[in-house]
Length: 490
Image (cartoon, helix red, strand yellow):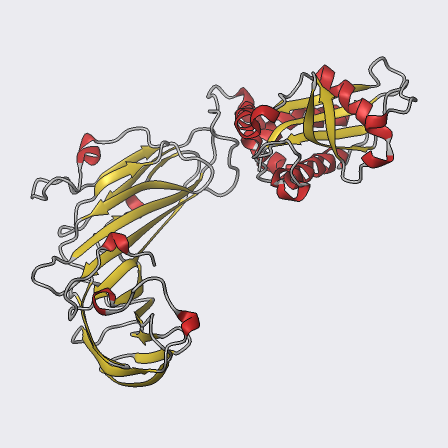
């Protein structure tokens, strides 16, 4: 959804050209995309003069336009959509969104991400609705409190800066241009510091910095001597910096406790201006030793206006947060299951939620369940052929819980035949779902007092962190050989 070009044209009957282009804006990056998408049907955006003449001709707004023209005026070409095709330079520029309001013609050319021959249905082109929204927003801005030509000229002069913020690179972010006007500091134009092209505006308001660390832990546990269990932590640090000024500078530091697991494979956002070489060279491919860099990890940066991912990282934690054992024995129409889960003593025992899902695909509906559970409660989802063990928000003081039982199935329906032999024998598994707030498995945290902000005003700094399970599987230890992680499509 983007626009290739935008025009504002004042209608002036009686003048040589019957109109004047008051404002135009082209987006070269979108134009390059149009050339690729449209292929042989691509027609380039013309100069203002040829476009003005072709548009006024199509809208029948030329003074000497009295003759009947078959291609434009026949009954088969009645236009009810305000979307036109302009004949320019031997080709047709389509689609052109245009309408006349108060002697001002508002026009734009949306990007069509496919070939234009034949014309695709208008409803399939999302850029058309975005183009109308943009033009209506410009119309509302120009008509608001407009009393004379001087005010109109003032607003037209403001449009380049407003569209830089409201429609950067041709993509509409906010159709209410008055909002953009309120947030733009026009005095910054005369500031000695030049605003970079990638930053589409400046922030005005209460300064604040928000930092959120989210770690996802993956695990494959088999409880077999010949197959090693695997686990990995992947972290994302997300930031939002609402700071006044053209180029505010911020330094964010990530720290680890004494026994924390070093961060590795760190990838940073382009706004980071410099990095310690030790941060860039820390890799999970290398063997871990006591000399591994363990922080603090400092990131000097010039933040963008929007929320962004400051960095990604991995870490080799010594143990998974929850150790599990799962065994399933198949006996005709029954299966016997045994589950043991143990929370590691170093992990925070305060979950937002914790559940164990045990699916039984490729079987009939669950008709009966006999079970014994040491903690939490078991729910049966018969239509989904699965059990859900709701553990809750805390493990007991022993940090260990057990579930055992027998599940009986009815006759298997032929309509539910599966293409994959999943959840049978070596492919039977238990999947853990949990989330712990204000905690990370590596111990990584952002200290509010270590955040340095070089901008006007003292910002409010907030930090958050959480640990989430992702692809956390415990496989049937009774089976001869489980499937590999890469073959699962869940």
